[in-house]
Image (cartoon, rainbow, N blue to C red; front, side):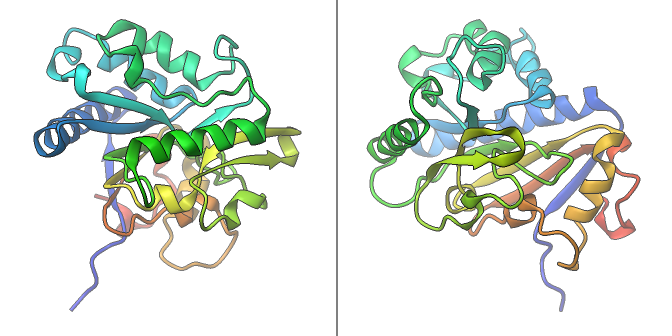
Length: 251
């Protein structure tokens, strides 16, 4: 008898195919969640890779297939900048998706990156508690990316947030960036019903291969610690990112 894999890896031929697969999966998850609970709660990722997904979801091909009035949007992490700053994850998602679909403003729950980091983290935690009630928040879907150093959200190697076991949100000091980042923590990520990593490009091949290696030797990449306790972990990757994958890691 073999154990069920801790993750599923789906390899798509190119970025376009990957984004289409991600859009279809998100739409499926949204419909299922709305059908069950009357709402779909998603945490968006920042960065350049998910931007293409958001732009696709805003097109006439996909946008009408989602009941945006029942969608609630949060973020996996945020830079400590104002919402109109070029580096803001909120701004990127707003311009590429949220401003282009009929989602109620009250359903958009952003981190207040312009505030003091500790105060912003506390406010975000309070909002999560008011929205989800007691216990850890359980998102219907969390979208994540993968950095070349193995970080995900703003959970960077050798930072304090990696050791957090209770709080759902922290202001994580990242020495190599000389900055704080607001981020969801592993307890919340691993409580999600589904987590999808989006990984593209040859520059991610080495770290993807190491993160997905069965043996837990080598560097302690933060992304390795994303293991939903009662949910699904799905990796959507393009062929360019797969050169370091072991044969068993394919779909």
